[in-house]
Length: 443
Ligand code: ATP
Ligand code: MG
Image 1 (cartoon, rainbow, N blue to C red):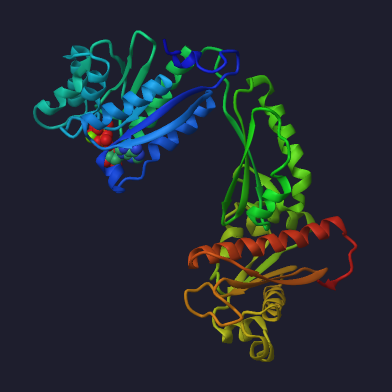
Image 2 (tube, rainbow, N blue to C red; image 1 turned 90 degrees about the vertical axis):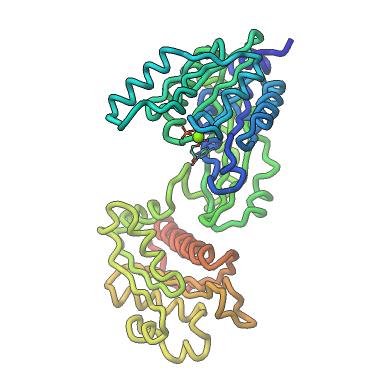
């Protein structure tokens, strides 16, 4: 006999339960709808200690639904489906799952009455449509999951071995409400104290490539039950620590212990946790130093200004910015020298440095930050390929310029360039905090 889902695993307090998700709909297979339901369900269930061990997507066919749900049921004994519950004849989930459990469909009067009452209450025109009657057909033994936002109720079906399928609607808004109000309480009640949450903690790093991060922390032993995932993106590499099967009382301490083992090896590259924005930390550091900032942007066309001003309260620190796309603007507004442009080109550390200095002066700010680069697809030269970006920072204490080579398409290069400028700025603000009396120097 198969274990029921909540007896799977070790069975002691803190065990994680595995289930599978089957999302249903031709539009998902065709790619017209992105399957956001599966991701949403997985995130919500993790919190109550229910792990999704596999996901499948099938079209609106009875055979495919029966196969996918049947296989999933064999493996884990618990399946959540979404979609195919509506009144149209492409909605086949209910007959498919009923067949899988060997149950007949019967008219469920209370559901029909509730749907008719809803029809009248919403003032919809005409007779209650016959097509909707099919939604009130329920497999024998079904537990109805109320739909607060739509007509099609969800269904919980369970066999005598305790294996179950929960059928939720496809419409994300309806699915989310039903998941939160009905399925999660039901699963919690079944799991009792046995289930332990799957809890994550994310360290955000920037300025160090993923492979280097892996060299730094890949071999560090983590507490038992904690896994590390590398999540690279244009803002940097996030390190997600996920604890599974650890009791609620100790999970937070275990994650703190895990983070504490990694952080000393990551140096300055760690700037925050969760979904924290580096710009927030930068604004705080500027405020702490009593400094204001101005930006000068070429290839990013204002993205750096946008990142900084997106943070509420930035107006006390951010003076403004100049989008110096054309060289004439660089010279006219930012006092970049014609000679530097001719000798080194617009994408050079010299010009970036002059742009940062010019922004400081022109806008009367303590700190200037500049970006000039080749976002592509055109504009590359032999020694300056697409993705070559020069960034510069000038503070009252020091000035620094860097060249970075970024990858991706135009949009990604512009985002990464903005982030690289923030990384350089953060580094120099940290120096200011660490050595308040530091002499002005050219780094
Ligand atoms: P309805 O009563 O509207 O027919 P339903 O339960 O039958 O609901 P579907 O017909 O499968 O659900 O899907 C309804 C809509 O919900 C689809 O048009 C689609 O846009 C959206 N949808 C379905 N499945 C998903 C999914 N997995 N992720 C995101 N959106 C989805
Ligand atoms: Mg439908």
